[in-house]
Amino acid sequence: QVQLVESGGGLVQPGGSLSLSCVASGFRFSRYTMTWYRQAPGKERELVAGITTFGLSTNYADSVKGRFTISRDNAKNTVYLQMNSLRPEDTAVYYCNARWSADLYWGQGTQVTVSS
Image (cartoon, rainbow, N blue to C red; front, side, top):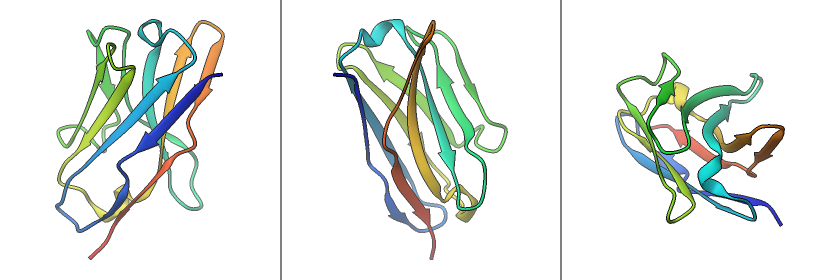
């Protein structure tokens, strides 16, 4: 059974940090490109950051460059998103996505709220 389970979301003040994790099971994690997306209320889901199979390449949305860092540990079947200097506009549900060939999996999401 394929599962992606995100964790680490919560409420944080502007300027603060959070670290999200996404643990995968049920498929060969190291084959998959992993991506974090987010969706704010009333807005479309958008790509935040992606990382290739062995972490050799990463990409980021312009809005998070220099503040967020994506990484992965294939031995732990886990992808991470370190979020620093958080802003109110980062408030959203954050989703983990796994993609390889025609396979595409999504997690259930974790809420991140940035507010004073």
